[in-house]
Amino acid sequence: MSVKLPIYLDNNATTRTDPRVVEAMLPYFSEVYGNAASRSHSFGWAAEEAIDIAREQLAKVIGADPKEIIFTSGATESNNLAIKGVAEMYAEKGDHIITVVTEHKAVLDTCKHLEKDGKSVTYLGVGADGLIDLDELKAAITDKTILVSVMAANNEIGVIQPLKEIGAICREKGVLFHTDAVQAYGKVPLDVNDLHIDLLSFTAHKIYGPKGIGALYVRRRNPRVKLTAQIDGGGHERGFRSGTLNVPGIVGFGKAAELLMEEMESEITRLTALRDRMAQTIMDACDSCYINGHATQRLPGNLNISFEFVEGESLLMGLKDVALSSGSACTSASLEPSYVLKAMGLGDELAHSSLRFGFGRFTTEEEVDWVARKVISEVSRLREMSPLWELHLEGVDLSTVKWNAH
Image (cartoon, rainbow, N blue to C red; front, top):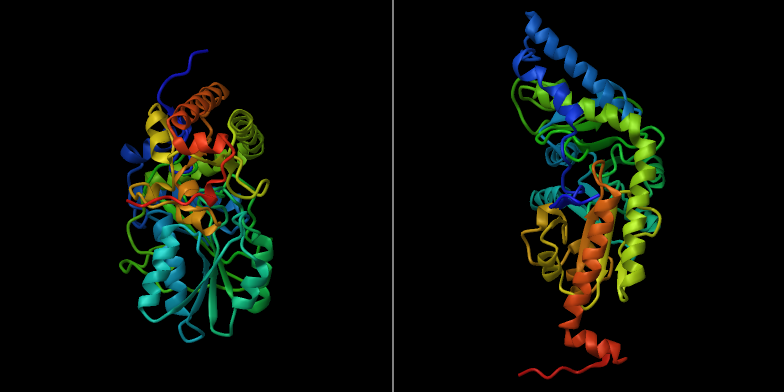
């Protein structure tokens, strides 16, 4: 079977909308087009009913009550609402927030904004495997701490944090726990009650749904979480987030979640096999390659490899028929090495030489094999042009070489 080019392996950045999702959405553009806030006629009632169904579909994935699902424009807004909303609402209780240096920019930049407003933020480091140290987290919590925000799974390296242990620590200390679950929602099992999660951000376009629609889970009891709204208007979404609801997007979001629930188990098995197939093929053929992140505590569809003695951008150029990333989608315009990999202890050269492979629902075995062969060929070609690789093959320890500056 011939492979159709280009090949898409950037499913951690975004996913193709599933045709079944598109089909579910279509009637809500032209037939059921009412405003869900219009309570005085059947057009509005039909829209509201569709949204109620979607809330149920989305809540079921994480074991939540449908009333705990608040719709937003995407996970960036959800993160902003969760973090800023808690910071403002609980200002009298404390002004301290704890997060992690490897979080998505939507969390890090929100925390930086709060620091400018006088809030105190602790940024936990990670180990070489990308995981936080639970003892460090415990030690960082003070009587002024109001929120801990730790992402469920990292967008660059796919590492899954120990959410249950983090949730238990937060619950014991009486601190709210928020997780950016954009990469994990529907890809691995998550239960907000079992994990003691109080706030959870997620979005449609990472789960084969449309772009521009996201949600925030906000716990209603034990404890009841309150937030200060960040967008004021008509008091929509229990007063948490005003704005006319995107009915077609929400319907698509709900359908995407329903499909995840039906197919999660088989998809975990299939994607893990594809990921391991790619890793095995490349690692068997290429020396001085390293898989970044924890060996087993990781997403099924994510693989991040550093290729020593190869420049990542040159490798990407050589793989122009493959959609890949050398960092997260939100920072790919930057020439700086990945801050996630740097936080794990990688040097600039190795961090610059990393590629992220994102496998998804529509990825085939044939595509994986084609890309693996192409990667091996390109790595070999680029290394043949590298004097450093030549020295390495001669057994020279490059860390001991003193380079002359002219």
